[in-house]
Length: 557
Image 1 (spheres, helix red, strand yellow):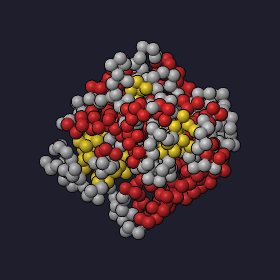
Image 2 (tube, rainbow, N blue to C red):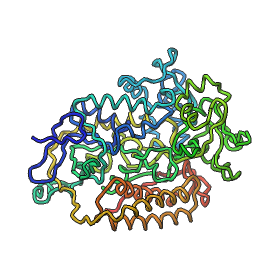
Image 3 (tube, one colour):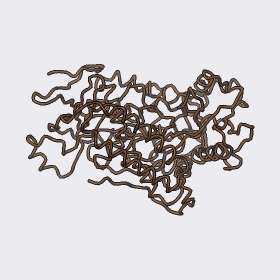
Image 4 (cartoon, rainbow, N blue to C red):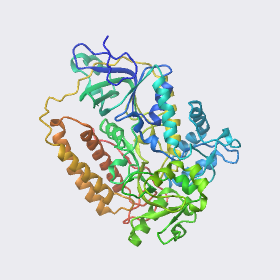
């Protein structure tokens, strides 16, 4: 038996079929190494072999960028009903109450599991479970467990350490998923009888590019989990890491899965405005602890927009900031927490204090220049509460999914909770299924490769796509702008389709191809919604209907 060893931390039973290009085999393949993916991996690995793919370094998942915290209904003064009500309110009429209730009722178990994984949350001896709870916009109670202002990084680091030490988990860095392997990718000459017996398409794995060795291999598994995060990089300004290119959503859609509510892109209200820090998020918790939004002249403008002031849901705050910036012709507004005190700011927000100080901003003495930036994808691949997609043996968890929890706007800190709860449910479902033999699949075909002449075109198209999405499909939209965006997206899509078969795949091309798919899904969804609701605000349809449904897009097969 030969072993595939490139950047594998520990030996594993990965063999080369004798007649074909190498195929890596495992029981469970997890695409994405963030909180959702690691949750599934750690829980399934107790009984099965697991491979986790990360398209860059393992530490670069979006989870590590989350500052605020994770929701936990832990305090006796709080209740499941209150959290569900807050989620429904933030979601502007499109939240599935059953989903919200299921995830809420599992919040304490989720946080306890993280504590058991050695996640070091900020402590409070008098708090529930010994944890300090904070409050964020849209919440009526203090229910956010956190690790100072670096919660995501602390959680992600702890789970990565657990995964690295687990004998049944292989962590592969710098592997970029290209396309899911489904029934039509099976080898016809070996599997005719098998294909005749298959009544429905299913997922068998993924074709993935090994960046280090510059080769594409098939990685097969009895089950596949897509946990690749959101689509923030489709916009020019985003709080997301470079990994957030909608890969899982695009791959699942191409494989035949429905997607839902892609028009609802959450713009975080407060991203640091500075030429040296274009994607540094200023956590919601700072406003939750009492910081004020002000114009440069010191006026606290949220008094003109919502009675909840800075604690209004993110869509309202982001739209208010966007309005004030355009109204006054300014580049940013200020988030002022100086009145909270030097010791308080340094203790509770050490990351923000240090990052801002590094660029010449002392948050204990001055307001922080902030602007909205694309932050969270509220829609995604449609799944049930166990993470099952439309394609058998393909699961999805985390930001890549649409479970019905977020509706038209995500309530702060519900995202990390959703990752753990739905990741756990997906793991439970996977472990219920029997392991079946995986048939041989076609190797990746690069026989039509001609050269690398299109690399400059990829860079130009990438830049154009992000610019048109920011300018035409941003916080405030119009039908005309959406139609213009769709027209150009269709041209970009055709260009990529024309040269994709003849161009050696690399990370930029793969991500551009996926971003174009996601951009089209966002715009088509936005054009279908003839109202303004939550994160989707259209000047041509400013009214909000009394009743509304999710926007569902079904791929053509």
